Image (cartoon, rainbow, N blue to C red; front, side, top):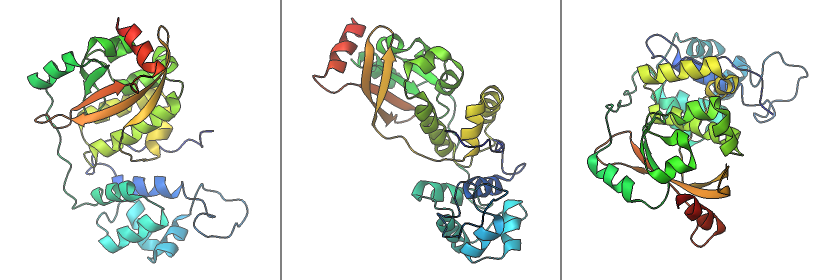
Length: 279
């Protein structure tokens, strides 16, 4: 069951918002007192840990932690960041993301917008599996025929996040669509890093936040996660149930662009159904 709605963390830049404080608050709200080793004291007015509890467990003053959450101090030491990561139970990816939010951290490079390289487009056209090229916002830049046969919404110009959150037909294609959206939202956070004033990111987050309560909750959780090759279940209206492996490959010379290939296990019933769809 989804948790209670959380405040939406703005997508805009560190100069105009408190990205570090928003992240700390979102993450402490997801750590239960029991996980932190704090005795259950009955009814609590806030989800997760209180500010003073985080400060105590991290070995810093409550006043200093309050300054961090309110954006009055945006450059804590590496030792403080390590202590906060331990208390907030951050894994390696979330800890790395935390370090990018301090004031003097180098800004993430913003890829230039553009079309995929000619060589990548030629390769895309020859692949026998459904394949497409996406950017870090999950915009579809190009796709082959079999990808569009799998989902018409994988045509160039579409956005996978927008389709998954707002298009019932795309949701019906993914029986596990809620889990899938969680993965994509967490990957969006990781791919943009601390480049939170990116106009394309801000426009996409604003649009989805207004249209989808589920997106608002997921974006506010500040989950950070990469994508690795993993099976994806599909319920295709013509090919039936499919399980395809999703692989992503960096495209040389096109920073931020990825080639995505959906392929079945060799000799499987999924391969037979996909071949029928291709024909």
